Image (tube, rainbow, N blue to C red; front, side, top):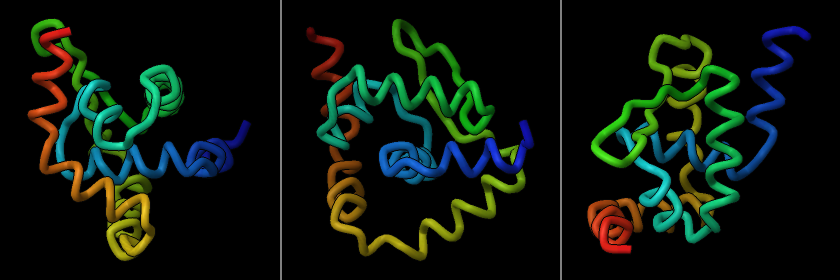
Length: 113
């Protein structure tokens, strides 16, 4: 399949776009993304897996957590991120950005489960 076509198929989902947008502010783990987005862990993990398979995100182990970050060596993705920042008026994205301030709280809640 065409790489460009695969790229746009990955972007054809609101949840994946929200994840990419949030990761543009820095690395996050599944617990943080789940808390920020108010979405079930299974849903967020499934979309992260697709983004990882598509080489749009990279992972790093931090203690017992896996941290996700953007593949900053992916030129097309980096161009998309600048476009996403221009479309932050979506209600989900406004709420996501507000919730991003609590990312450490979501991480701590996950550590104590």
